[in-house]
Image (cartoon, rainbow, N blue to C red; front, side, top):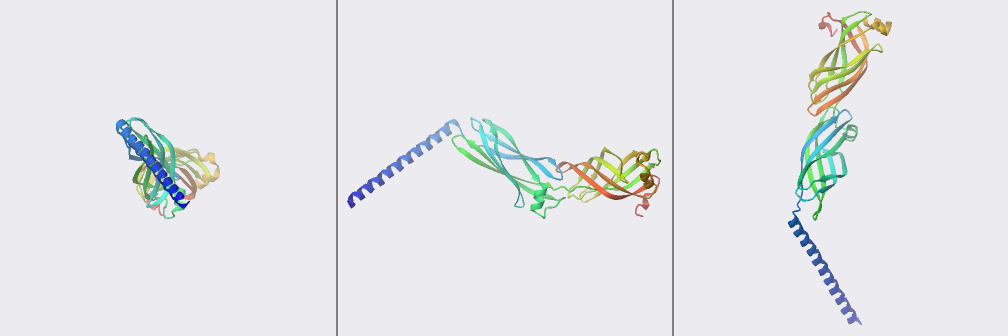
Length: 306
């Protein structure tokens, strides 16, 4: 009985071995056929390269980035982009990551630039890493994995990376340093606002335009959007002169009495449009409860510190 079991086990092992050998031959045959098809038809591995990174939009809250990836398909049929995985890090710390499914198709024997949109939310970054402050410039590295489906070959991953720098903008500090009156009357008053812009950023600001509204004695004396050109260096300041006219009689006696004095409480808010190394930015500003000096046009500026 025991010998019969041994003989049975031996036959089972032989059967399993023959089956494994048969399956192995089938796999080898399929692999060989695949290689022959690949050689005959000309299937190959696509290539990809990061050609540029753009910053189309940036403000105090977030930065939008677009990564341009040039993908070349040497195959005679289109290949789909299955997934795009991305990671942005700074000094080895993750800033944002994600996945974009079904990112498109690359035409046969062609090349296409795939645009990958990414967004950095500054509040999320600053709350996670306390050493990243507004006004600073931080290094970054973008890591991208393109997963493409190549016929015969199957899914393959194309890893890419690119480094650069991105700012974390600080809102400008705008002060109404003084108001110089050119014409001073109850009916019509014209004046020049001297706005001091303080740049707290580690990069220069090239002022293009300024939109503002000013309040004196809690009364709005007007506002406008003006084209102004000025260069304010990093950690520096500059003064912008803005002409304005208004009718004091429209605002009651409080504003008139205030204007006859030497100082005035003010509020100002608006937006400055600037050029930077990283592109255009629109930066809002807001100042409440400030105090400014009122001067006649012929007054000497030497006593500004009095």
